[in-house]
Image (cartoon, rainbow, N blue to C red):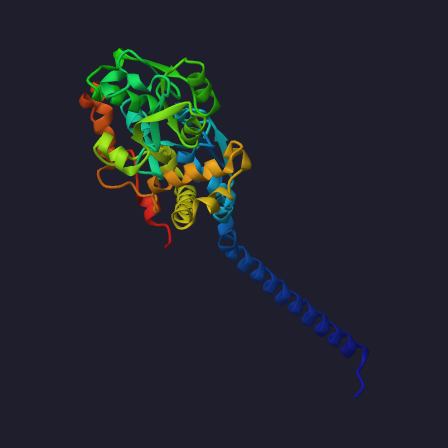
Length: 359
């Protein structure tokens, strides 16, 4: 069949029109694919980058705060899609001040700071509890141990604490008060922890001081000091304090918790994984996951001190019933003003996030 020029021209138009329509179809398809990809973005970026979290620890090398570095080294922060920077401070009170100043978003320190700061008009909240006793001992130098028979003998003494306003200061105040004296009847001296504490005892600046592991083990190994008050074991702590004392925790500004529930949930996930790991692994296995400098040159001694501390840690990060009440009761012994201040303990902690951690 033959076509004239006009027929060929018409066929050309039809072909061109077909190509244009096909192009439009492809363009629509591409646009629709692009749209669907766009719709998928939130799901794919459930990996939306979360804000960096700076956490200050009241002594990274202290076994009472071991979950902080262990969580990092086990890779649990990364598993949760978190960028976490850990920094160390010799005392929990310095970390607390950094939190209030907005320099960090979280603190690994003692829960009692949340109660103390609420009385001062600052709202802090523990979102995961690591241990149910202080994990510490009041250590007395061997040369002076005969001077200390009961808590009443703390009167008139220089007693080493990490720093003024720290949890060590709170609890030493309580022990002095329990011995029938007032907080004016002794001199609290800031000696820090670890090497500075050991040096203070060796140099005779203090005959008795607050210590945690692994410093306790080092003092005993070197023949410098002996345990006078046991707040490390569950039995010793309950005997001295009369119950469960909620202690090492992750606490944050209450406003931050409200505004960043996703971040807080992922932090809770990471820390609870670590607590579960600690409850199902031996001290040797846990020590292998930590920096060698934590051993202070003696890994065997570190493992021994870790073994003596493991029972203090929770396996679920939950605040136990009666824990906050016991802490408040002890704080009120030497802080009478707390009796006249309305403290809402429910605002000082939450189990909301640890309760949601998958089994």
